[in-house]
Image 1: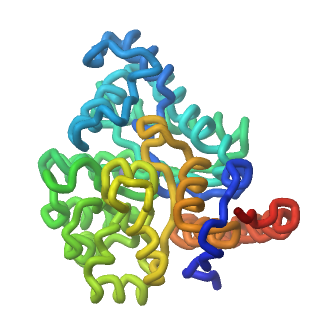
Image 2: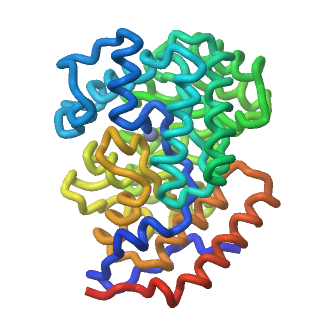
Length: 359
Ligand SMILES: [Zn+2]
């Protein structure tokens, strides 16, 4: 049994960057195309002949302040994908995602969202590149990972069904589920039920993004898409009944404090992360991750640091976010038990070495 309700420590408690970096993490909400280091994006785009508007350098290619809306952010995201024109390009970005924005920040395990669609590579070749990068990252750093293939909800349902069929036809053990990405306002969840039913019949786990709502979208995702977790989902707290249901059913929510603060979904864009606190206080099973880290000027350490300091959470609470993610991940129960054991051992070792800090 694990504690689903992190216990807030006294307001004003601060979490050091060193502590935020050291805390073991299980990453359930990070996108491959959103976690390519800036210098790599610029290099690969130039090599592939993909023009990024403004011809930015590595310092300016991910200027999150310049994203007028989610659509503009996603157009940069697509250009990153279009720049992956060989299996080795995909291997490289997968490796860098899992190390620079993973193992370097004590991420032990990641279920990474993969959207091959913007790349010109055939699906099997793209998948092989991801598997190469996962293997190399694991052998160099120990990070374990699995793949969640993500549907582009701005494209047609027919395309989504075709994509899921392709995922099933080329199934490997590392591909464990599907997700629903891109703008919710341009692709509400309900029409994608046939693609999700196909995934379910194919033995794939299921999750979906719901960032802008309305709260009823959460129930569509649970009941019609038959998902076992929700990505973002901050608007759940605006509906008491649905919140109660999600608490009772222990539905995991994969929150991403920094990217959602910039998008004004988890608070007011002022770093308060108000809705994440409301979710935790309501007893929801919240996990913390960093979404598209370099594109929003963040990384897994920074997200734990930001949410810890904004909401007054200390070591116990931050490790509970990781316990929640272990419960929510799609590994076998024996693998989850092994992660829980490692986390308990880490917490025992570090309780005195890294005490709760006080102002
Ligand atoms: Zn996301």
